Every structure is written in structure tokens, then in C-alpha cells.
Length: 384
Ligand SMILES: [Zn+2]
Image 1 (spheres, rainbow, N blue to C red):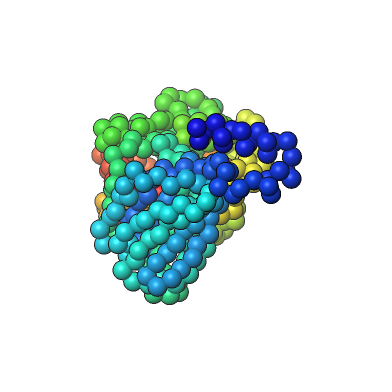
Image 2: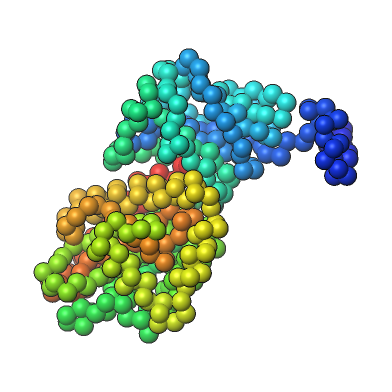
């Protein structure tokens, strides 16, 4: 009955927008459905609320004593959904209230919170098994007290198979960097990528390699492979070279339009030059990132990438592998990274340094790198 009348209403509306004002508000068919509700504890003791909906949510937030109310337009409540509640968060309970075509999610809090700053709100596109997710992070007290990200224990609340795409840089006619003793970057990174895939598959991830043999792929194709598989995380593996033979250590980069420093800019330029061997994928890439996601969504992906990369760098250091001096994570416009998929580019070490070139050729060191990256992926919080 309900379905028939909804269809009738929609048909009438289709004949002219004027009809809308004469229809009772309750007669509108809500477009979105609530899919899931979950809470989590994030680094810095942040409480995370995730609201998953079948359609892109149009939302507003209101606050009252010990309550946060998230109003989502054109969305239907589903009281069969049991919120997944993590322990130790500020949220005691979550309730749903349908008001006309609007769904209100009320988070009952143990303490009052201030207005959630924009930087702590993310709207994520569907990926893998997830639909649209509105992600809100907050702490008790005023918004100014929002803590910065630090490494902390993550809570895994799901047994979903996450999709990881590992990109071994260069290949075929593009050798990448060449070490003092002739080691080719393309060979080292493929070997580490294969080891990492074996470990990730064994750990229950769904892993794809952009290349599994010595072939040339342009940067656009590599990124497209990640998009095609709806990757939850994309890692591009490289090894670098520096005019200074003394320069040593690994380094990790995430995507940004502007480089964080001159060295990162030069590195991105060198890695992006791979495409000059074939077609120029960078122009297409630039257009893609402008159109693919809203600024806020791109910001969310950027934040997730930095969160992943920072922890990854810390784990590699902890495993006893030398880091290049400087910050844990730097940023630059790498053409292989996309603003739509959380990810990072890892320079595994310097082939221009003789001792590091020797190390990078050993199974022992390659395994150590792959194990550290595996651990960083296991610790990464996919649950948003
Ligand atoms: Zn490279």
C-alpha cells in the first residue's frame, strides 16, 4: 500500500514542481536509508560516531546538555539496526527518531561537548562494503580541546575483508633509480610488493598488485587499478637515489597539491617523470582530482592517509629500519596517489647509498620492510 501511494505521489510531482507545495509533507518518499551506526575510540581519546546511509546524507548538527543530535534529511529510520558501541567513548547510547522525512540520531553523552569543528567531520563516499559514512570525531569540553592524532590502540569492530592495492613502482622500460652497483628500483619494489601481498593475503586482506611482473604501466593506470578494485588503502612502493651518497633511510609521502618541502617536491617530480616515458597522465590526473570528490571529502581522505602514513613510519622505525632525517610524513603532488583513496607512497630506502643498496637486495631486509608495512595496515583504522 505504502509503496503504491509513494509512487503515485512521485509521478504527480514529476509533472511540475508547483505540485509539491500542495502535497502533505509526510507523503514524500525518503531517498536514503540508515544502514548502520557505530562508535569508536580514536587516537587522542576522540570519540568517533559513524552514521552509514544508503544515500549521500544532507545533515545538520545540534547540541544540548549531554546530547548531540544529527539530523539527516530524506532518510528513513531503521529500528532493527543495533548500534555497534565501542567501550570508553563519550556516547552512552544512540537513539533514532523519525520526524517527517527527517531522521534524527541522538547521541546521549556522558559529558557535554562543544561544537564539532569542520576538520573533525568527514563525509566519505562508498567503498568496498561500505555505503556513505558521516564520521564525527569529538572530545569532551570545548572544541578547542580537540586532541591531535597520536599513535594509540585501535579498535577493530569488523571482520570485513578490506581491499589493499600495492603498487610496485616503475617496471619494463622504466627501471626507476639505479644503484651504485646496478640494482634497479623496479626489481626491488616488485620483490617487496610480492612479499607484502603474500603476508596481507595470509592476514585476511584482499590484496591486488598493480603489476606482478616486469611491465611498464603509466601512473594513471596504476591509480585506476586501485579505483577499479575500490581499494580501502593504496600503497605505492619505491626506492630513491640522492646525489649525496651518504643519504640513507626510508621516507613516506602522502598526496597534497603543494609539496611540504623542496626535497619532497623534487621527489614527486622525479617519480611523476615516469609518465614522460609514455603518455602524460598528470594532466588527466589533475582534472580527476578536481572533479572526483568535494573539498571536504578530499580532506577526509587526506587526513586518513596522514594517519596511516604516520603510524606506518613509526612502525618501520620501531622495527629497526633507518628513517631518512626529517618529519615522519611529508606531502607532495604524486600523480600515482589519488585524493579519492587513502594511501601513501613509500620510498623504501636509498639505492644511491652502497650499504642500503646491499640491504635492499637481501631477503632479510625486504621481509623486515614487508612485515612492518603489514603491521601498519593491520593497525590502520578502516572503520569509517
Ligand atoms: Zn620510484
